[in-house]
Amino acid sequence: MRRSEKVILGIIAAVLVSVFAIKALLGQYSQGPDPGVPFYSDASEDLNRRGNAIYHEQNCKKCHVLRATRDMTLAVPAPAIDGIGSLRDETWLFTYFSAENPQSILPSRLKPEYRMPSFASLPEDERRTLAKYIASMKVKDWYLEEVKKAEYEKLTGKTYTAGAALTQ
Image (cartoon, rainbow, N blue to C red):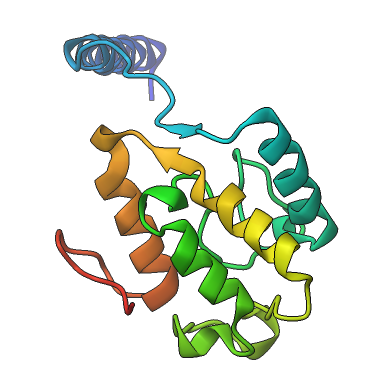
């Protein structure tokens, strides 16, 4: 290829990159203002402290994401905790944590070593605190469908369609 051909090819490439960059920027700004972080907690300071302590003592972060933190050395496809309180209430979570076999309440497609462990051996007050803490992890209405989709796909391995329901 001659030098003049290389220059022309370089100009064409630069123009194409510029066009795509401008389109991307215009697309970004045409979507409206950033709605912010969709996740929040309505836990009191005391509940947040006690629940977070149990969450860490039980090593839940080994499999679950909470506030976008997880043990990145493990690739376990467990559902995120953020927003789960908008899908499950405190009573359901307490029953789930108290079950000798949590998969009897919510079946899992994960390998046995990665399935949700039973917390039935924890003292009742710790299970209640953990249930209340996890139930406090909410999601704003505008993002609820995304949380449903993520939970459904993680638990079933199937593609989510609007309105698809999980067991229980």
